[in-house]
Length: 91
Ligand SMILES: [Zn+2]
Image (cartoon, rainbow, N blue to C red):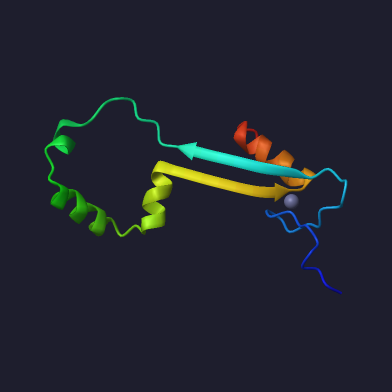
């Protein structure tokens, strides 16, 4: 049996039925700039900033996700409820 074309919840793996209670999660978390720059940050040279980035040990993707994170997933009804409860602080 070929299951490759069967839609599955991308969070728990449960099969999503055609015409069922299926959902698509679209999540964006964006860094919020409040207009304040630390004075010491403005005095740093690009070389020092590049050195700090190198020393952080973070990958390019991890650094990018600190500024902009996007997640899109198909969800089943149970996972939808869990995600909403988590986002509302009820989990
Ligand atoms: Zn699920």
